[in-house]
Image (cartoon, rainbow, N blue to C red):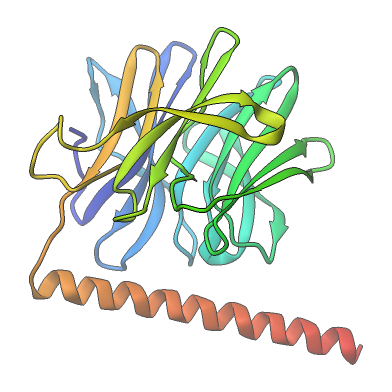
Length: 271
């Protein structure tokens, strides 16, 4: 279990090793403001430190997918509430990061990165239309090239963690949201990345950890460690109040974005 800072809970754990040390990046959810931040913990003496918030915006952030490329360290977090796809480069790892918006006016969740043969591939998920999308990212120009889209008939394909490479074989966890958001994980074997030809080979729910938990929706492994996050349903007026506050924040961000889009359209019509 991860040590918690007062006023926060944590989700979407991503492991990363650098210069012999192991780091755990997570969504740090601010209970008071009902919004997610990006946090990091450092492994020391066999335990992870209390997470420290390192990136925050006015919109919700989560799913800190960290990766290395040509000697530099990057992160693509979940920023769909801001209608952006953002790339962060570590300036002073792991605490200082430089932000760059690589695509705007887009709502894609839990974008996951695969680096192969000097190429960077992203799998993004269009939650509204239930579509998985495969992109290639050019790090020189920050251009995203859409390679393939796959329409799904069931809500079982929202990404749930980093790719798992076993020799030439490639696997990835996805969230089964048919009954509950992030209810359990399904592990897919990727037979052909470029047409997203994948077969389900295993399922993992919260039961083996504890019967008190109702959901399990992220899995990652690195440096001999494995991480998952689980969710316990809460009830009562405090829980209800938190949900209302969270929905009001989302409505505020939606209105703010729509107003910005309207202003942009007006400026385009009447320069």
